[in-house]
Amino acid sequence: MKLYIHPHAPNPNRVRLYLAEKQAGGAVIDLPQVKVDLRSGEQNSPAFLARNSFGAVPVLELDDGSYINESLTITSISKSVTPSLS
Image (cartoon, rainbow, N blue to C red):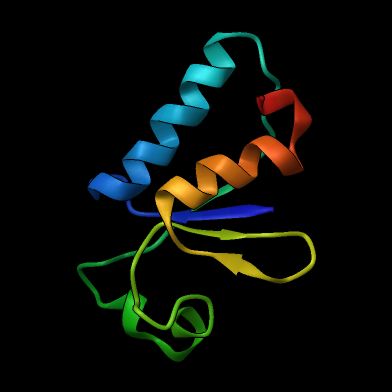
C-alpha cells in the first residue's frame, strides 16, 4: 500500500494524524507516503488523475492496485486491511 499526500493539505493530515496516533499506541505501520506537489499541479497530471479523477489528496493505493480517495474511508479501511491498526 501507498498513501499519496500533501503535507499541508487538511484531509491528508487527518489520515496522517490517525496513523501517528496508532503508532504512538504501539502499532507497527509500514505505509510509504508519496508527496504530491500541488503547487506544480501534479494532481492534474494524467498519472495522478488515474488514481483519483478529482485530482485531490489523500489517495490510498491498495496492494491489489485499487484506490481509495476519501480520508474517512481510508482510516476505516486501514483498520480492516492492516489488523495492527485497529
